[in-house]
Image (cartoon, rainbow, N blue to C red; front, side, top):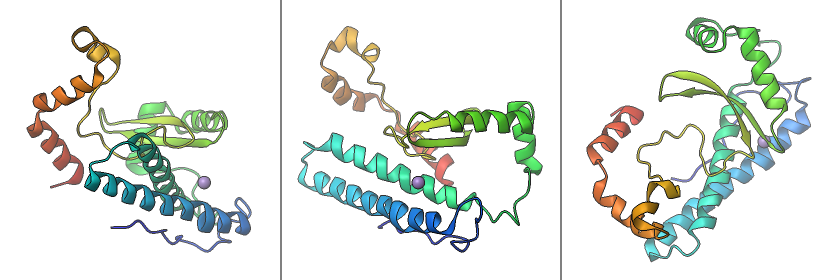
Length: 201
Ligand code: MN3
């Protein structure tokens, strides 16, 4: 199923004067739309590669999927976490407020760290408050560009370590042999359990 550009939950001038109408219109209809088109093309190209069994361009295709996928996901989250200044509250309440106080000490400390981290992102990127399912904690991330081969919000189900320390004593430089052998030691019950936890089945 192809990805689509989501409609904004407010008018293009709703975030004035913080974000001006023209900036928001261009950002949404040109920049975000470009990520949607790019992600659809990347996923299409990956499907063709699978059909042909031809992975000669896999590095490039993976990069395109990560870049455009992360752009599409982060912009969708971004629009939804904004609201007109006349309707905005100063701080959250309830469980989120408690979690922020627990993990950052106070709302003011959280805000100071998020502000500093976001200002100090090297080059283009994002400041991100994230929930880390691994231990249930909130973390603040700086994201350079927006992917580095990740897709935000995606939960790892099956992972394979290909740092040299994971295979070098036995496989030396033959990483491909290690990855092929890896398939014979996957615990699919655990992967399936993770899938159901994440997807809620
Ligand atoms: Mn953008």
